[in-house]
Length: 215
Length: 343
Image (tube, rainbow over all chains, first blue to last red; front, top):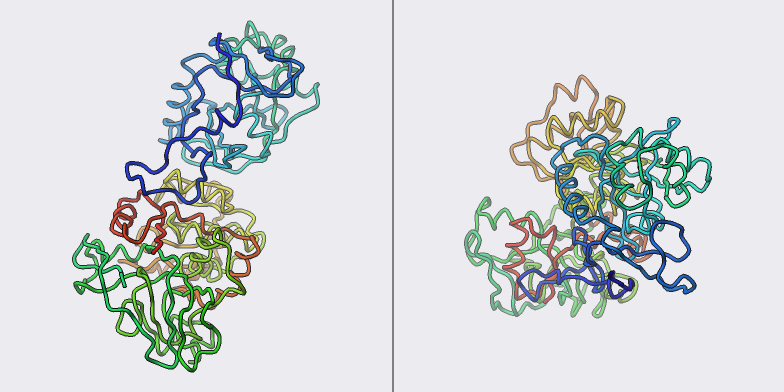
């Protein structure tokens, strides 16, 4: 079981942006920030988390204010990162992959847009994005920024992302998720949020999930 | 001093040239603090324009005034100045009307009368009509943004002005080079509600969003037209900024313009035919041309110094002047959006 402390040391790692020529440097990328497109330097399976958020992972030091992660390789499956990369590439090529969109949100520290595949769902005429991992990077970035670029194929649109706090509405959205986005169910199972595609089980998992209203 | 010279296609060198000196009453001698490579510098670089071997190149720079001629009034030694991409006298009818790029005494950099901008020093005539001084020495961090006012930001602004962008408009920007990105920033600053950027390159899309684009379309030609029409309920955009200059980009610009719209064009035209039939049938206008950046400089400078706009983000490669040849190569190969050079 890996224990990784997350903070500036991990999130701030970067490769030299200069390419082969050591004298070349990018004006707009201060040291300590990563560029868009750089892969997360943390090993696969590391999930940063804030204290006290209920969910599938237990905080390493429940009482402390420091943001720590306790990680199991079961938390994020090994195929997730390459699969995400593939989905983003296919989407960029203009392929429409079912409900899959690419959401780009500005990084909390870098401000650079970072892309992640998502599946928006529509409930009662409103669009939502859900995540079973409240401490995943894109969720925390979206909470911090409140907006993102939502792309379908080769077209993307700036959207406002409002976190849904109403527990009843969150349950309603989660209940619809396995019906609207069946291909998203295995991911919820894999990370331990639910055991099956049962809508009631999804509704029950709502307190540990994050739901954004897409405007 | 050292200055950039071009000798043949793909042959850019930093050469020793005679030190310039003041010899006319309207002259100024400027020590260059930062200069940059323009998309238009790539035409001679690629051999698409005729090259006079050994000629100077570069027309965008900022610097410190070292010395001025007897008649110069608006700038003085020690001032930090921004130089528009051409020299204008500031007094002729066209200058007074705000079209300094049509000045009766227009002087280009890298000519007998004015040094090229990609060097250590530039001597130019008509200092009062050309240079704009900042109120005080700017912070180092402001220099890239101030440098864009010598060309790209003023040019993007001109595209938006020419297209008559107003608050609440839906604007399409064709082209994701430094000028197109500046056009996105200009349209957003003018209050456009929706700015649709046509961009195929991820790093440029990123910057377009930072500059205020609300939609990105990474298709071209008919597909781009269909995408914009889909986004605008089949109507088209209120204003279109054409920032490329090819036949294809101009065609797309007219295709996405709604009836009554104006296409503001600043891309230097290469093989463009104007669709006069479409313009007649749909009342779509065409306005713009070589941007009188001098006219916009005071306003844009105030915006930059107040932190309202940060157009300097278009620079994604910062090189010492000694590596100017690498800078040209990077821009030619589209590895860099725009290259900043420091002597």
